Length: 310
Ligand SMILES: NC(=O)c1ccc[n+]([C@@H]2O[C@H](COP(=O)([O-])OP(=O)(O)OC[C@H]3O[C@@H](n4cnc5c(N)ncnc54)[C@H](OP(=O)(O)O)[C@@H]3O)[C@@H](O)[C@H]2O)c1
Image (tube, helix red, strand yellow):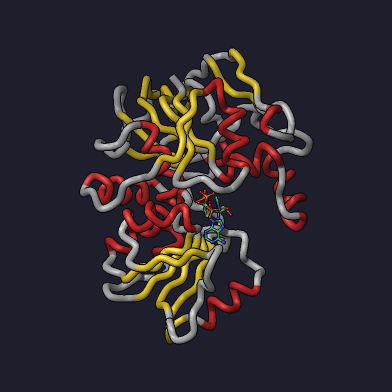
């Protein structure tokens, strides 16, 4: 099968397209024929190892000392179950699935074997029927992140919600989920992304490149930082001051992403009911993975960047 190998940490050019052996599922695994994967913020961290100093030692232990332990990287997949191990009852051949591979990695390939129970090595669910495989990869990654961090807030109808990074993979889903929950939503993005964020349902837009995002007298019941680089910044403290009594501030970097198939099922339900739609920025073929990584590394993607595998 064709796969993208990451033989060492480094720039996008370290990635190589290779022919490798097709895996065979164990009794408790499924074999997935992957039709689409994605280049996410997480893939950039893993390929480049540009990780904040305080996380470097634990990250090297988890990911690999001098090179990734798993040479085929890639965290997100959407595809079809080709065969199932004899102990698997949750899925059958032909099921269309989407999910994350977690520390199992291996999504930058034509095939991947996965266990069907949630763990740090992945979670799988049935793909929303009204999405392409490419769209499903954006729904899996952005959806799991947005839902996990927004569930903490218990958003109620009529509440004021502010979302930083409204144009990103997570932010585009967070805006729509907050609207679905009945909130009045303010999206923070750059000027060129305002039309997109408005089209997703944001009631108010703030261009962070031109205006103060927090204005005197305006209070929020929930603030989500979906950019994730402001954890220790002054903005975090300012956000806390802009909270209404009982309000909550959450950064997308406050906790590890949970790989949860129940959440994948909820995301599927809301997508099929057309409350949420994933946004694709660019789509590349597998052989152009270097270009895809170079683009995502710039940090300005709008929605998700996806890879068509077949
Ligand atoms: N907790 C976990 O386990 C976990 C796992 C994965 C990822 N993450 C975090 O999730 C973050 C988001 O990932 P993602 O893929 O959803 O992001 P993304 O798609 O890269 O989105 C970032 C978006 O935010 C915009 N932006 C940049 N600076 C901004 C600012 N100051 N205010 C408002 N918008 C801004 C960017 O567009 P412009 O630059 O054009 O404005 C871009 O559209 C990652 O950076 C990572 O920190 C956490």
